[in-house]
Every structure is written in structure tokens, then in C-alpha cells.
Image 1 (cartoon, rainbow, N blue to C red):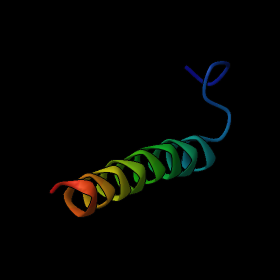
Image 2 (cartoon, helix red, strand yellow):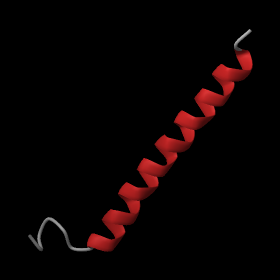
Image 3 (cartoon, rainbow, N blue to C red):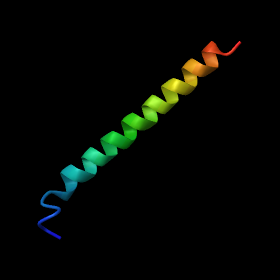
Image 4 (cartoon, one colour):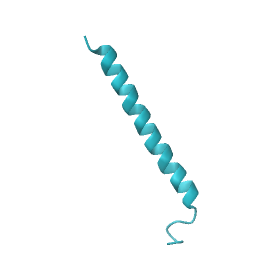
Length: 38
């Protein structure tokens, strides 16, 4: 669908960036939880 996907590389890069940032946030939360654990 060219009308829905005029630039597939840019969309793929954007989705990869969102997924990567979500993974980084999840790892940071895990590290903070492990440090705050008694």
C-alpha cells in the first residue's frame, strides 16, 4: 500500500526507536527495583 507507506524505512526506524526506548526504560526500572530492594 504505497498510500499508507510512502517511506517504509523511516517508519521502521521510528518503530525500532520506540521499541528500543521501551526496552531501555524496562531495564532501568529493573535496575532501580533491584537496588531499592532490601
